[in-house]
Length: 430
Figure 1 (cartoon, one colour):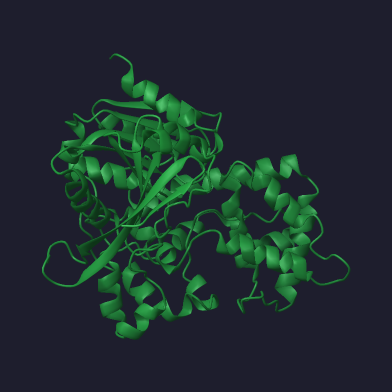
Figure 2: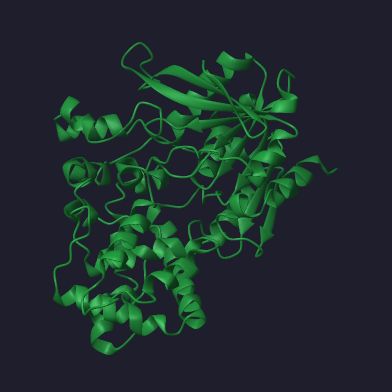
């Protein structure tokens, strides 16, 4: 273990060895990293633990720089453990080097099938028992971490003292098709709100899309900037400052010329790269909604066809606004992105995988005894409000907080207020 100090906090690095396949514990092993954080004034005290499960799938735990409001609030009552979920960050990575070790696409798909929420929860249980034995700990799940938290409540509730969920209450009975069928209208609404706020962006976005339609444009990474790739920038519209960032990106994309400027292309590259830390996000995104059901079969692409307003070519012909897409993964991404292209065969096999293990135990959730509080954001672009509220009715004792004050990133942007509210919900009398 390595210990360091930073701005009133003490950090301790932990690395744990866990099975790749928990059903075969004596076979291949991987490493999982976690960062323990305590307030300097609390160091040495036997405070309860709070496990933080972050967004994704496939994103490392946030790196604290100091001053994060929710962390400061948590450290008053807990020692916080920031988990790099398997395959991310300082844990054994999933990247292109994996392809050199596993050359067969079928074997790659089998390997990647072990990186969903069910395996993450079983990792967490090994870590809990290693650190504190039989004592339960609390968990805070943000976004995809919330999905993992519901899996935790389903299969290892004995390990939990409390559960907090922020923007991550999934439709536990919904198929991938139902998820995307619910989300596309919200993405449409986010586009409408953006263009109402910045009406000049309608023409700016159309001008960029028209240029990309008529010309081949290459981003600094070597990735083609197509109209569909341009539309994928809409993923930022679900964050607190996302609409403003998109507006600034569109302010003058042709600065000093008749083709997209270098500054514009570099900024597009940064925004696209910020979506995820690696290929795992793209490879398993739809699989996060799959359990014991038929293959997802590129659900986001199929359901998109039910919403013709997202057809950019038709919009260019009709004069309609270009609609940006949201947190949807499409098969063409594995054709155009140099980072993803080597994973294309495995990605298609994952999309056609006929069955997946269950992620949720509905009967156990109906009989839940762990105190749970969940923030549900009114116009969350990433998790449908209706599906979240349905799940809130299923989980016994869950205390929901429906709010329009924050966006999906409210935990990060609220200076601790979101976590404070959930703590109050947990601690109030029934």
